[in-house]
Image (cartoon, rainbow, N blue to C red; front, side):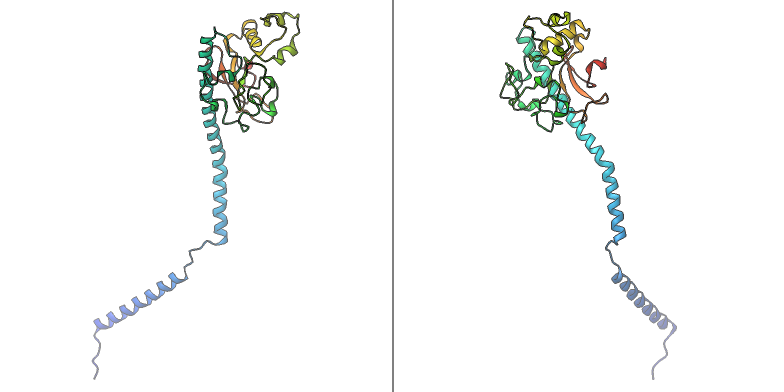
Amino acid sequence: MSRRMTRTEKASMQMQTLQGRMRRMYAARAYKFDPAFTLMELLIVIAIISLLAAMLLPALGNARERARQANCTGNLRQFSQAIQMYMDDWDRQYPPWLSTLYPSYLSSEKTYICLSDPTGGAEGGRADWCEEFNETDDFIDADLHGGNNGTVPGNSYFYEFAIAACSWFESSYNPGDQEFEEADTNGDDTITWCEAKAWQMEYQGYHGRVPIVRCFWHAGEPALDDSDRVLNIASEDFDVYSSGPAWEDSY
């Protein structure tokens, strides 16, 4: 004859039954859980990533350009020191070309290349979209005007004191004009860039504010405007400074 269950035993059995049901319920829920994204959730994630990329890429581009400008400033400082050493050795005369400085005063050809110049110096100091004054181009494939160092493969920098004939001056003044005679210091009826700049310093009142070397590769395309920035070496103190494309308007 079976004995009757006590209340305690009944309660224990009911508890075990309830626990068993709960375990089966949780197991069923865990089995049904699908960790994969739905299509809508995936599209939302892609949209968020695209938005973040659109916000960050311009900032990254600006950071890269600032780094390139810092490198370019370093190149210009090396040019500044090299030009001063050359002038100390050559009775205060400017070097005829920037390439003249290599390798006696500049040890690396990399100094001639601005990192913002996509051509690696193959288009000289003025890009195809800024072709004026390409008579100052100074690298291995450029037209040699005498005194160039043909071993420099590329040059991103615009040298304002080169011995090339100055196209803007000769298109503005003719032999016999007072300005032409003032600038033609050696009397050969040809005004070089160096002579034109010396004339600007003495007769136009710019003095040491005339730039020696300029870098146009941080400016925008396809044409220069007043908001573009150009890096320069000042003839006054050989320091590096920033100006607009027309340096005269910076003073």
